Image (tube, rainbow, N blue to C red; front, side, top):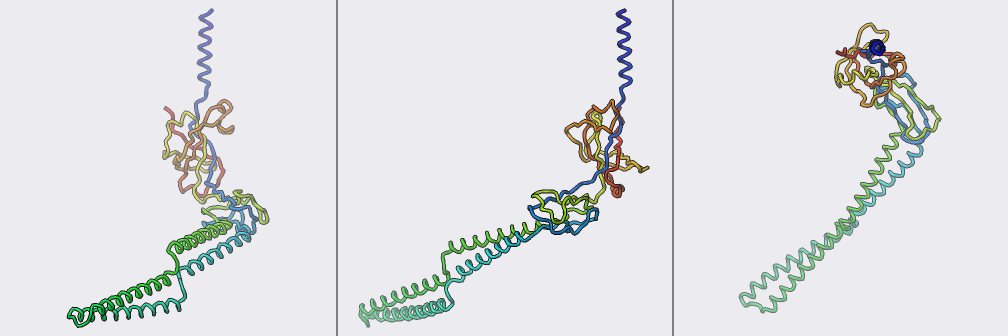
Length: 319
């Protein structure tokens, strides 16, 4: 009796093993394209949407225009700050009036002439003193006059230098730094002003405009969605038994519903985290099995296919 029960148990176990379905050799999903989300750069009111939903757009096309009045005022303030900093730096670098500099330059020339004359006079008297034709007192007096002329020349030269330089170099550097800061702030405000015009960053189809003209949009809210103008990719769920056999860059056939021919696909990404297979992918028995989300690029021959239609990626046959 015990032997009969054991044999019956083995028979049932074998029957259950034979009824267990094999893992499917295809990964099911849909065709998708890269979607570019353009977000609001400020909490402002939309004043214009020049392009309608569904239209083809190119890089740089204006899609959404926000109100620019407040930012234009900030930009005007920063432009005035730049003019102010420029004028202050110019005042420091220009120095004194041209008339004062010209007068000091004339005084320097006069001092230079007196210096030359005093030098020549001293040389003559020193020569005569060496011949004992004049007294040492005369020579000393000529020497003193020469030194006095040299000192007056140096003083005139210093006055002219001060007038030309105007202010200390440190003051000029400080004014230059203030001007650079004003320019930086102006550039920032100009960029903020430019960002109020939301432009296409990628060519494709304008898939959606969630807001309308007149809406005040929250900061960072999505205001435009572009569907990239490229060949689609298959976004599929790969059964767990096949994951270890796949590599990034591997070529895989792709079947699209309604198309008789196959497309060549390249595996570009596969998730490292498993997920439960979606309800439509497998039968009721296999729904609890884990699967890995993956993306397979299609070649350019599939560029005209619409987004969202079902697709199947043929997986390598397990041995």
